[in-house]
Amino acid sequence: GIQKPFRAQGYRGRFRLFGVAADGGSVGRDEALNSVRSRLGRNVNDSAAWIDYGNLLWGISKPGLAKLSYERALSISPRMAGALNNRGVITVSSGSGVAGGSEEDWYSAWEALGLFKGALKEDEFFGTSKLNLALLYNYYRLFDLAKPLWDQVLVRSKISEAYDGLAI
Image 1 (tube, rainbow, N blue to C red):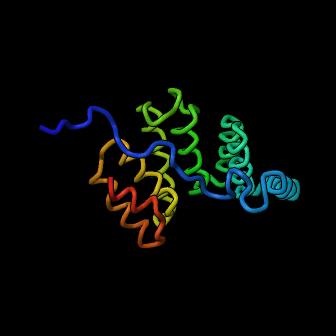
Image 2: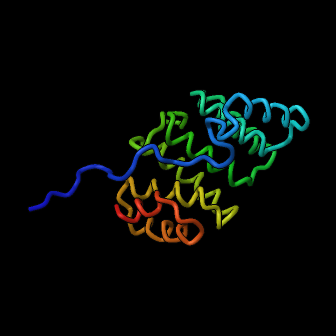
Image 3: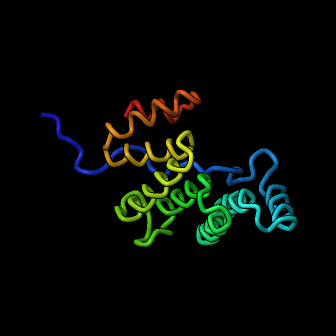
């Protein structure tokens, strides 16, 4: 007969950050960093700028500093869905969780789950966290929990990851 997998399945490491692309996007990393630093120079309490700064730090392999940047955004705006989401991504992807971090680390996955759910509590239509939560559910073969999230993501945007997620 067909054997069932003994471990989790689904994509690894395809979580999405909210805000500026980690590589700076079309303007490039250097220009994006200069722009974000300028925004923070004008207003140190710009929580969106702290999120973007964290993304750019993540893009240059500085997860600890990225985490601090997201925490700074949360200290300014404790209910900001984008910062909660990005903290979840960092926790589950980089080893910055309490127990070391990765999808294989159940405690870090649980911690990230709480952050993604917290983001959705603050903004129930926040597609980035829905996608990340669905990825995490798929990874742990919790397909019944993932499917409604994939369906909701597809209502808002027809991204290939959502179709891939439904196919798992």
